[in-house]
Length: 521
Image (cartoon, rainbow, N blue to C red; front, side, top):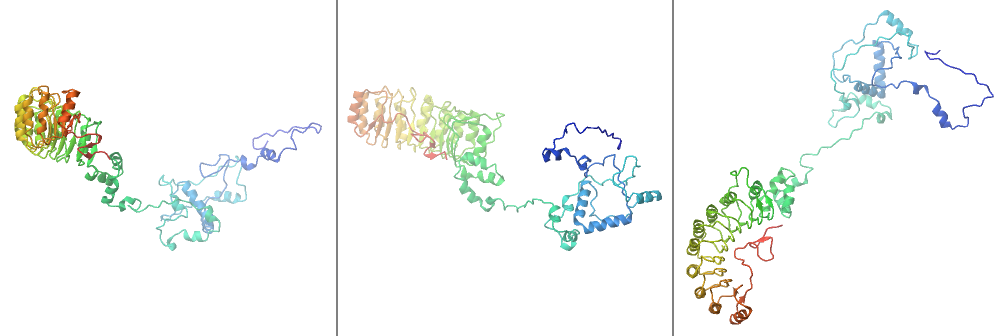
């Protein structure tokens, strides 16, 4: 019986075979042997020792503490290990100045006698020995861990002088090799000064603008999310002079944001602009700088369009093809006194007051297209009587029962600078209109397609119009009569243009340009 464990011994005869293979490998033999250290409980800095062990160290005394201090001063490795242990146990750091107190507890005579008897005894005693009364230690003042930089020999860059460092003397006396064993390695992050890590801070806003002007609008929006400076620079007016948002769905607040960036050439053909929420909440920026606005076949409500045009006072060319209008919208159009080109093809809602306001106010108008707008008789009369004499290109096709020879006479007399005139599908015109047109001095293009009340022979009188260069007569004459007209009007090109280009923003193959200005990057 050894320490409560019973040992069993069995007898074996020599004749019986040996169960242990003597020819086994040395690795197998080593594996079978268990060292006493492996059976021991692994001791560390955490937790309490096993209950079956009792430490028979003597209690602390001034002499013992003095000896420990000397060992700490002479052995740098022991000193650093002690600091690590204190850090591990969350004890108070020893670097602070404390009040001097006698930490040595009084020792009873029997305790002194017991300590003297245990000096030569083993560290491990049996469980029958009386338990040793451990010294009660004060708990740490805080649960914060001791910074490793205070324990290790790693010092910050901005440290004091070498003589002021309490660990410098111990570091000098450290034996060679211990420094690397107990050195705490840290990767120091060098913080660069503000602005040194951003090369764009070396560039002025003007240089950034010259770089950003080569980027498309979608990339500009992404660049504006980098930082505040990029957001400010990308919103500069020079980067948003022209913009194409055709064939898209656009929220009203998005339209307001785009207009606030100073767009000058703006294409919104076939774009669907949603109504604001609530309906009466519209805040377009004051002084919109748009000069060329294409809203052809755009889906937009009348209140939104009226509010948009109410803030546009610098329009030079405007297209509202196939967009519903009313008197208020026509009045807002009339406020753009610098307007030179106006396309109202297939627009509905143009009344007498609206036409009167536009014809009277737009004195600088050069091109006007009001074809197929279902103009009434009084509306047509307001147009021909008040239209500016500066007009050069006019298309009033589709006035089937409202435009007559008298209106043509008033028009030719009031507008002597007419160069292109389209009177197609005006079925009330007669051969008298041909005689009136021959009195014009500058007409180069004339369209009389599907004017069925004009005799075919009357077209031969157009030879008196010396300035005429092109004549369209679609749906009127046969091929034989057409050959006769070509022979009589040798210098005139007949039926060369299938569609009218008066005041149209996009003509020919330039599908992304409006009135000759490119809208895409």
